[in-house]
Image 1: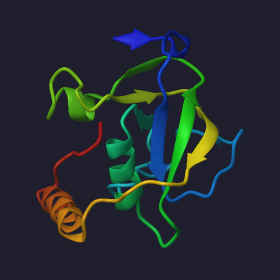
Image 2: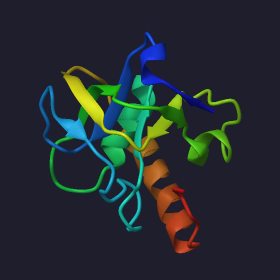
Image 3: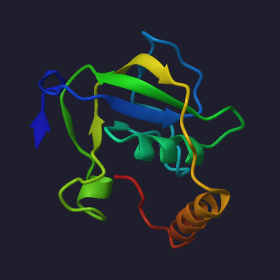
Image 4: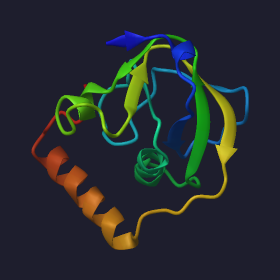
Length: 137
């Protein structure tokens, strides 16, 4: 189901290692944080800080982990990678859009997952990759 971004009165977050500032746009057409697949035709975001923390912690590259408060600039839909496959009903409040996300602010104080939990998640993603599973539609 698609909805207009203006319908929401909640905050949305995007976890990454990209160095951005308020007013910048996150656009489709970049590599996923989680796979070596072709560039994505969607931008992904969440309404939970925990999911954004995962995005930042699992992002590839040497840059510092960052979480941004974002504003969708167009229609959004539930992220089928999570809502259809792992968490029916979208309890993770994960979304995607073909339109850019505008950076409103950076979340500068957040607590990451424990090193053991982070390694478990990375091991799980590596297993999926070795099995050639499609992680992202």
